[in-house]
Length: 376
Image (cartoon, rainbow, N blue to C red):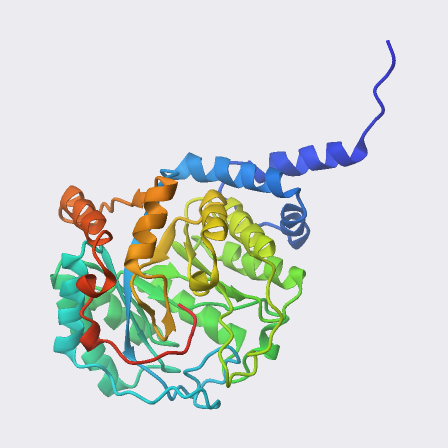
């Protein structure tokens, strides 16, 4: 019998696949290990990501949230991707903090449409005291409706985080955006350490963390691996990990950035799923630019959270009817949330709402008239 030639590449790949499929939740992934995952053959990577996904989640369930901008524009930060920055002329007007009653009305409409989580975003570097008082009232009022609450308000200190938690805030979103090494190319008005400190304050206050990044800002592949490594180091891992694709907005410094290859984006989704097996990986900004095939691959790679509706802070989002059609085509359904008072009723209401036209599911008159894009 002839001997079989030794295939060192196959052995290396097998070792890497075994590593990728490891069920243990780890915080000590090395950059080399993460890059090895990115380098796997595409089919192997998605297979392992799907294995990890099915070990922790219903493979056909997707967590669905509604997002409202409660204060738009004139942000003092200089994030090069963001149309809300006051440093750039993107045609986005400055808006005051939305009135509490309008926010509550919008949240009630979201609940009636079946949403289980209501997210609110404000374009601030950090909330001022007079604004924080209003925001705390918003949280309490929305929470009283029986919805999970999430906010993104910029940096918060320990006292602000504590007060938000005491008001009933469940999740706080604060993205790392990119790797530590590339960060200075994108933002100069806030340090990477500032972002990590805010996340630490949020966690110390007892809230859940929503943190991810943006791909396609001119970063190198190693920066994508380094971003995920920073998220993995957080203990525990963020409960929600939004993976955004850059939306190139005229007037921002990144308006002419080179398009990111969709396959590279899907690889990042899959690696995030393997590294953070118990986290919800959110297919977030940039989804409108993705065709159905790309979105289907993202769900196969382990994405299991989206925003639905017409608006994503200041960027357009696939309409409810389009999402309903895609869910039906792929056999997906909204995730049942243990935090809902009546999960069955909430899920049935959401499925029914996704059949209706977008205008029937949203109180559009209460939303901002903003056409640019930002992270979520």
